[in-house]
Length: 160
Image 1 (cartoon, rainbow, N blue to C red):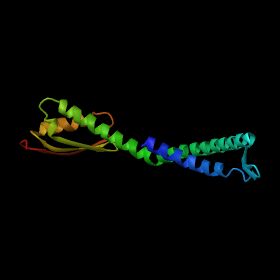
Image 2: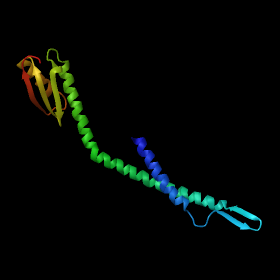
Image 3: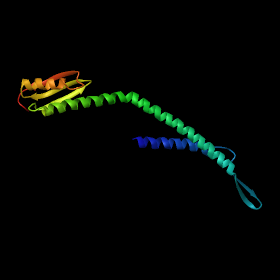
């Protein structure tokens, strides 16, 4: 995606610069004259160099402005999307930590326990074999780093 955005930015920059470069000056650096002997073409290399220099300066300014705009856009995206993305990643990481600890506990049947989390609040759902296993799952969850609260929706009964 970055590559596509950079390609688009380069195309816009090139188009903007080319438009001003093509019409740099009214008096052309190429002069065609007709006389009795035919056509004579005179090329003013000084004007060509001046035009190229001006185009380069404009291109540099445009590139600088584009760079500033891209940088500001990145800051805007970070400000708007960054916190949500960080929160989502933190929730997923907490869910994974709890689930891993439940699965790693012998005889708990952690693979049958559904775990979800949001802002440090972890919900346990599913079925465990006994009340002791339900309490074990809740205790393990509470002792996991990042857990603020546990919502225990576990059912005691035969495995489904």
